[in-house]
Image (cartoon, rainbow, N blue to C red; front, side, top):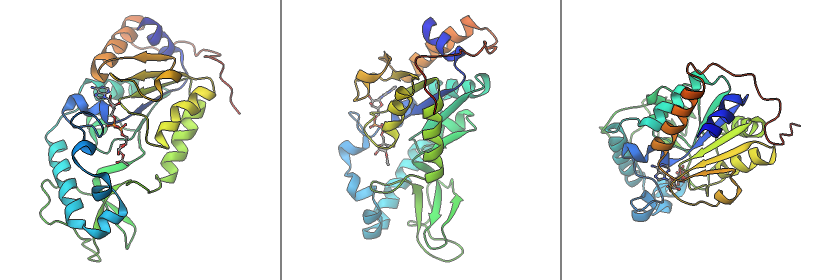
Length: 261
Ligand code: OAD
């Protein structure tokens, strides 16, 4: 932990990439864990554009259930620590695959949400996005108040492209960071799963936090097996012990064999 605290304090830029596991300790199910959504639901019936076209009612009922479940949960220590690091470590950036909004509720302000936001809806006809936190939804499926078209959740479904600006920014950050934490993701859904390798190829230190092995594990410089909340708390304590007010240290000239192009 001391070693990791040192790396994070000396880095000019630290990136954290999170997945569903970071919200597991809040009680939000993951996708592929023992109680994960994709164990009991078929992704192609709920999380594709074709499924929405076929049965918007069913898709919205599922999103309504998820919104209800998430609204009843609170951010956990992992979310709070990452929000704190945004304030304390000047070069800190958070990239998430999660759509639950718990990072934002914990106080993170600059979240790159690669897979969208479950609290937003999009009108396909007008291509307008709107915030909507109504739980439960009064009308399913919801319709655009302006043009009457069906609204869809503003999330990325299987087979769809990620928001280009967000992905571009995430890739740039991964390519130029000194340390990248990969927290609570099975690291199998691309292009998010490519970010740690992008960082690693440019010489960044890659730190995986996950109770389980993933396809990334063998490539990670540090593999911390355990729950995100517990491990991040331990790293955070080490950071405070090393630098009580989290004052920035002189940035390291070289961390790993970083090559910038
Ligand atoms: P997954 O459900 O695939 O993986 C969750 C990961 O979190 C697993 O590797 C678990 O071992 C780990 N985990 C479980 N509890 C944890 C804890 N307390 N602390 C840390 N890690 C823990 O979720 P994602 O990797 O986020 O996409 O899934 C990626 C994408 O696939 C999602 O964004 C979603 C899904 O289909 C779309 O819907 C487009």
